[in-house]
Amino acid sequence: MTSGTLRTILIVGAAVAAVSVAACKKADDSANNSAAAASSDANAAMASANTATNEAMSATNAAANASATAPMNATNAP
Image 1 (tube, one colour):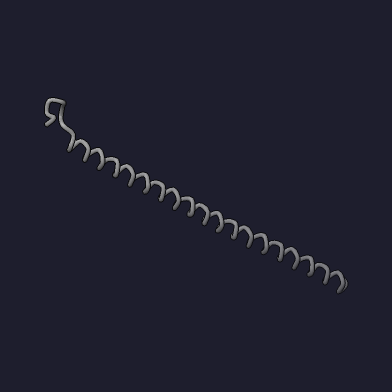
Image 2: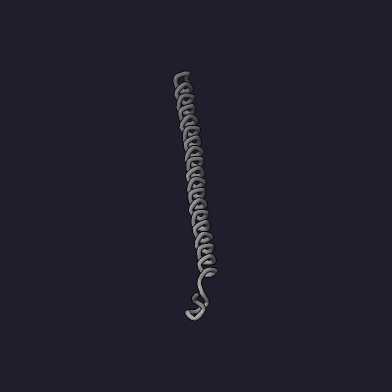
């Protein structure tokens, strides 16, 4: 083999290694971005669930207050 052939093989090998490293690096970023998006979606879902729970508790309290002040039947009205 000549030095030109060895140099070509070395350059091609370095290019393949660089492409491989770049491909692995992009996959990691994509996985991190996907995980961050999933976490954000989970946080939004939890916030919605908390809001729904708070609204349900408010409705329960309002119903309890309304039933406590309502007469049992029409004959009990003052």
